[in-house]
Structures are given as structure tokens and as C-alpha cells.
Length: 231
Length: 231
DNA sequence: TGTACATCAGTGAACGCGCGTTCACTGATGTAC
DNA sequence: TGTACATCAGTGAACGCGCGTTCACTGATGTAC
Image (tube, rainbow over the protein chains, first blue to last red):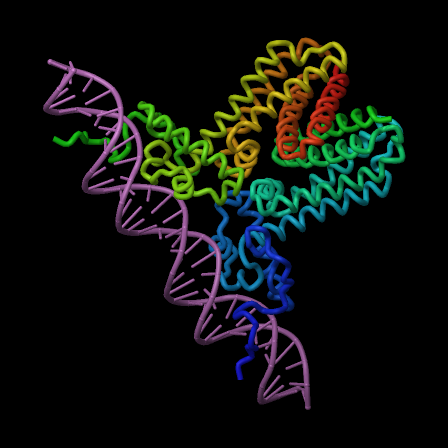
């Protein structure tokens, strides 16, 4: 009469997306996706709480028990959805990066990269940087998520994939306008700009407000001037 | 007949530099400095092993027991010199950053920043970036140290202090050459350049060799062009 | 140069704590009729 | 619209492991005479 069928591993509901585990053997995928509203809330509270704690004390000090305590949950509630804290960070990272990527890709599609003059490119760059910064600021965990992704080897790939995807789109958009620049150089340049704009965003998010605008302006100016060096 | 005097805390030799503990109450200073050659070796082996492990598995997975095992020591030997793993990372960070700072400051003093043309500044920038990259590459832990310092809140200050000190020296050196640029803008610009050159270094260190030189060239070109925007 | 003693350096073994995780269960929600 | 049942969601309590850390000790090195 038990619902357990022969080979199903105990306590591992078959609904979960069971991707191949990471090299280190750590499961990064979430388990159940919540269906009821109450469960959806729990899922979101875990993520939001983990994000805040990440900002306050870093990934290394973040524990599942502590998340539960602060979120007002018991551990089994968390483990219903996340197999471990790496999966939580992965979900936070996926969400933050895809939110950022989305507006950046829209910006590219809207011709953001293709200003004719330095001034035009500067204005465009400042606009998109502001949006990215705003998103990062509002996101629970903010810049701490990026730092954690960098520092945890099994999660580094995530950041690289997002970065390289965006860099490739930069390349595709800009390629026709600089027909005399070698592909390799142009590709490396785009990758570098994307990576450094992440670094700049993290820097701005933690900067005193007084300097944030100047900082943003200077970074964008630097990029705008740099693009002039291609032909 | 015991050597213990009234108020000395047990097992805490008075030789240690007993700075004020960090906000979180975690002691970051090393305890004893080794005097004998054998002890010096132990001290260095702990650091080198911790650096390698940091690169392989990140700070979060780094444990004192694991360091000892890999280094062929027992825990009390490690605890003789380091109160905890944060102190180990701090020492690694201090060493790496001061090695980098030293050559950068020498470069500034030698006029590295003050090339008259873009070409001259580019050549100078490439030269110093190459040296910094080489140092980082050769250092046990390499770029992983920087990432760990970023991700561990109680150690962030270290990085900022080093960065801001270098940025200030940049500012002092460059100030007379751009008399019409506002102080705040110039200071923010220098801080930004230093921070982004760290990010670039970390990127290059992990880049396939094929692209490393191009990447380095592009970053330096970008900085060189950017300096032209000041007057 | 040799011996005695003080100090430095490292070991073997264990500790308590809290971390990740799970078990057997209760309560809440959805659904068939 | 109400009841019975299935499923979803979360709890209370505990587990084993390994982490950071320490104790009492042995062995190595340095030094005074």
C-alpha cells in the first residue's frame, strides 16, 4: 500500500529536474518546484533571506540552518526545494544575471552600442549602466552574489557563461561597424568590456552615493573612447 | 614553579602582535612569529598549501584540518602561528598585495604614468601589467586570493586599503599634469583604474594563453586612451 | 668540546559544537463526487 | 455545498560527521658554563 515504487530513491521526488551533477558531485538544481501559493512564498523567502545574509556575512558564513532560522522556517522546509546552499546561490545567480542580461540584450538590440559619436555612445552607456546598477541594488544579495559566484569554484562557470553570452552578442552587434578589426581582437575586447563593466557595477553599488555618478560616468566615458580605437 | 604569571591568558604567548580584533571579533593577526629555521619552514608551508587549496577549492571549502593534512602537519603546529584560517588568508593577502603594490609604486616613481603620447603610455602600462600578472601567477593562490578577499566581509577592508593607497599615489603622480581636471573626478578616475586593473589581472591569469596578450594589450590601450580625456 | 638546562617546535588524541541532512509525523490545500 | 480522500507543505526532533580548537606531552634546537 505504500506509494514507493521499486527503484525510486527514498525522499527524492521524481519531479525534480535531474541534470547531471557538477564535477564535484554537488547537486545544483532545485528539487521540487512549489505549486501552491504558500509554497511559492516559502521558496521566495528562502531566496530573499539567503540574499540578505550573503550581503551581510558572505557565502562562507552562510548556513542552511541560519537561513531557516532567520526566515522563520524549519530545515526540512528548505530542503524540500533546495538540495544544499549551492543550489540556493545558483538560483540567486541565475535570477540576478538573467535580469541583468535581459535589459542589456534589449539595449543592444535597440542599437545601444552603435552611437556614431563618442558623446552618443557615452550617453547610451550611462543609461544602461544605471539600469544595471539599479537592478543590482534592488536585488536581495546585490553585488555579493557576483562575488560569491567568483569565489566558489563549482559556480564559476555560471558567471562565465553569462558573460560570454553577452560578450558574443556585443560582438555580433558591433562586428559590421568595424570591418577592419580582426575577429579575435574584437571578441577579446568585448569580453573584456563586459567583465570590467561587471566589476564597475559592483564597485558603484558599494560606493558612497556622492561618487557613484561620477564613477559611472568615468567608466562609460572610458568605454566610449575605447571603441573609437577600432576601425 | 610554573612559568605562568597571574594574568597571562593560557596558551596565548605574549609575543604576538595583539592588535584590536576585527569587528566580528575574529582575530586576524598571526600569533608567534617563528624563530628557528624549521619553524619558518612550517609557517611557509602552511601559507603555500593554503594558497594552493584556495585556488583548487575556494576559501569556503578551505579548512584548517585539511591544510594540515595536505601540508603533512598536525593542527597544533598550525595553531601555533595562526589563530584561524582568516589570519592565514590575511597573511596571504598582505603578501600578494604588497608584492604587487611594491612594483606598481616603483613604476609610478619611475614616471610610468606620465608618457606624453598614447603610444608611450600604452607601452608603459603593458610593461607594468605584465609584471603584476607574472607576480600573481607565481604566487601560491594567485587570483583566488583576491576573489576570497572580496567575498569574505571581514577581510574586504584589506583590499580597499591597498587599492586606495595605490590610487592615491596615482593621483599624486598625475595631478600636476592635468591641472584643469577637478580633484574629485581625477581621484575617482584613479580609483576606478586601479580597481579595474585588478579585475583585468584576475581575468588574464585565468585566460587561455592565446588570448592573454591581446587582453592585456586591450586593457592597457583603453586606459591609455582614457587618460587623454583629462586636461 | 661536552654537558645540563631552557626554550622552541611539533605530535597524538581528543573535545564540543554546529553544520548539513533526514525521519516520522501533523496540518493545509486541492479535488472528486 | 458538503464530505472523503489524495496530495502538498511544513514541523519537531534528532542523527552523524567533521570542523575549529586544545590538552598534555615528546622531540629538536639553542645556550651557558
